[in-house]
Length: 270
Image (cartoon, rainbow, N blue to C red):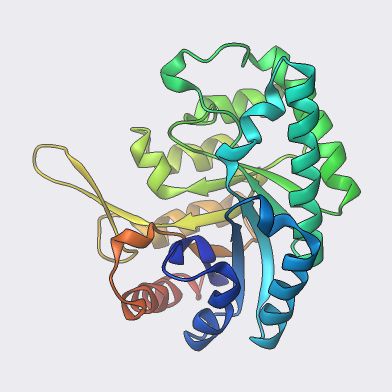
């Protein structure tokens, strides 16, 4: 299994255009690019970023925009909100195409503790078809990520969306930290959408004796990465996987590098 790093892991420790040589120095070759804001979707900026990525000898598998800036409005009932959000979505997809990415990581809409309106499956499923059609124009695969505060926070939602949509162009991302934050077992997401998983975000976690959750750098917690990887492969997984942690979880890049090397040791032989 190919192990890479998401630039999200260095959020605000370095600007995204300065991350390629840092990741290359760790021996990383495959990356996910986290685009932080609207100005980073603009072609002139993206071309600069692509040049630095190429100079560092890196390959971009996926792009991951700052979803809470526009993705909720993709599902809005207000026509202007939706139209404007689709315009930004196209900009992000074009940025992905310019970077050579083949996958787009989507959070979707917040569920706001179950109080968000107009997110019923029967209403949003046709919107997913629109999103898939637009992504296909750019040669990009749309991947929905499980996120504790968004509508795909439970395995059952992913399974139900797959069944109702009936369109295997929609793929999924397994995010370990978001699974446990949702109170769910990561293995349950593999069971629900495993045949359509094409991306995997690595973070570790631990529960203290009282059951309190804390996030850990990969390899420093309780996650059985090898068993989880084997379960994914049994479902047909052939994609890469990315160390994606919060940048306040470590101090120096040597800590990120150490976790990356640990994940390589555990997963590269799968």
